[in-house]
Image (cartoon, rainbow, N blue to C red; front, side, top):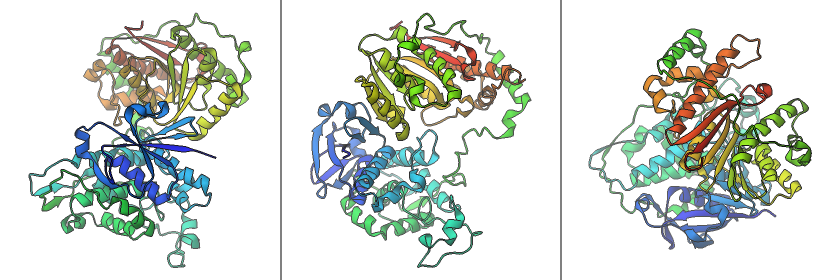
Length: 573
């Protein structure tokens, strides 16, 4: 039997509870799903955030109240909301938490109606906000919008509709993205009043945010827009500017389950919002669907970035920096030894069920990353394996250093489950599991490691380590996927920013992925670009008083992405 302990932040406890928008959305989802998850309301200190909160009616919920200092360890080391599953795994982040609530309800009742919220192949809001524009829109953009407008007093008669709502209006005007248009148009399952459309050439319009059924995206967007409409008293002038959003909102209200769940929000209002606005302005936004990549994001397949003249121009800018782009002759920790014959099967890549063609190279990669940790870790240290996947690196470290605690942090449930099985077979007691984005983890740690964290993820790992004055051991990957996001901007270091514009930097990143076989003419150029990008990362960390070692893995052919960055804060060196 699966157990789920949910932890939510609140600012006051009464039948009318004052809570942040994330808590409101979560409780609304629980009501919609008729979830039996155990609810724990965590009372936080009254801060200015209280002005950016809403009232919600708790009379229909069963819950336990606790103070922040009484939180279980798992729950206290991640941002709220989070869920502790079977007392072994912490699931954190708004989207991941809501998905777990739905999945736990479907675990109890396999054919429960709420399963539709997970969307096609149960993939709704599955990807992290750094890689999915949908997740970022629901988990970051809309939430930020609500928090920014609460507590404000309008001194003007005219107010601009938030950009995120304008983007949703634009999204609803775009064609629906369907994975099987023929099935949609010909199947009675998706019929209207029992009649199929029968026209596979006609792409249907949006009924809900992602197609013909309500998903978790609709739930999050509905609560946010309902809050916004409540603050503005549903003025006709507002609705006329966003007719498609208004139509969608009316359709959502017509759902019996939405209407029933809405009862807990009947007191939804900000305690300090005073709105004198009488007219509204719709901001200009890009005319694109939320399905598509962010238009500001670099698109690797755009051929303009592969022209040699652009790469040469970027090299010319690098030369103006007047710095040496060099790697150390040996990777950090090369003096440490690791005897694979003494390591049990389940702690090796073979135990991770890797194909035979990858085994030898994976052994070599893991050895290169374990050596620095073996050289630097002290008894009692906490080592976090960021983007841990199936746990190849973290499990090996946990076995080699039983006096250290290892955290496996991964946002893919399936990968984390594979790691759990290996840990159980090894009977390791020094491993903890977190299913979340790395920025939701706020626990103490001494060393952060990552093996082939894709693109921007490597920079997020380094940034997270620097913010905690922790050692980092990183082998980057997917240089062509680096792009600005709400956490990270490129170039990273002040020196590179002074000479290299973002476009030229992304040109170098794309070229860095052209590390093919040794006979390919682009390979040497690709490795040169890898060295430039990683030197920027090195310089960035050195700005925060880190000593950074940059070298190649040994042997170099164990992976095309064979750089190793080891950063040690001076206070720990």
